[in-house]
Image 1 (tube, helix red, strand yellow):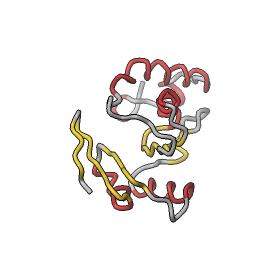
Image 2: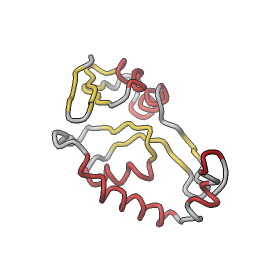
Image 3: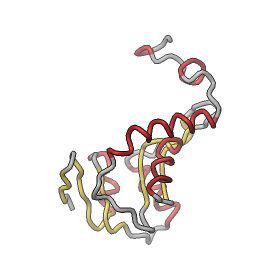
Image 4: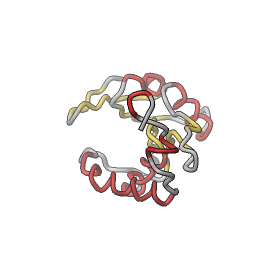
Length: 138
């Protein structure tokens, strides 16, 4: 592999032209190993929305396992592996409003990053998650 940091061209070398099915298998294997890291206190509710900068190809599997139907994530084109939408910082608010409307209310927002300040600002209450600690920050 070549390129900055040895990463090479992800579409051409790194994933070897994996199909969508191949990417789905990788995601499944990833969550087989990592699903246990989801906090035990999280009990999904029907109106939950997962808003993440992670990619839909990976986070979608976790949401499926949790039974969460609503997810707003970054997206990549599975054929080219090019980022088609980056759901980060103020983009999260923009996309949330596009999907749920200007009047939608976020009762509780949980995050592990201060980069989510725009979402914290529009939520009624917000919590910062650090390891097993949940700290109310709004």
